[in-house]
Amino acid sequence: MERSGSTSLTEKTGAGNVRAKQCGLSLSGYLRRVGVGKSTAAFPYQRFHALYQRSAVYAINSDSQPLEPTVAQLDELSGQILSDYAG
Image (cartoon, rainbow, N blue to C red):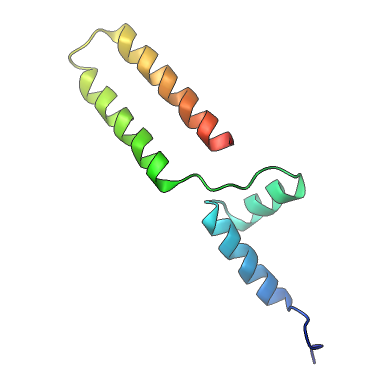
């Protein structure tokens, strides 16, 4: 029998799963980040979609522009993705 006001392990795990999902992480990934004091901020869907659209444009443009500008654009994009993801 549980004491009044206590939270069961199942409830704690469920709450952790919800928080992890909101952050776009697995439960174990979420707990690792929390355990070492790292940010668990969510990677916003809108930001991810905008970055994806940029990569699609670069792919389309790669057929019609020289290789160097495309490589530079992709390098910039990968840096932006990494920066946004790492927080």
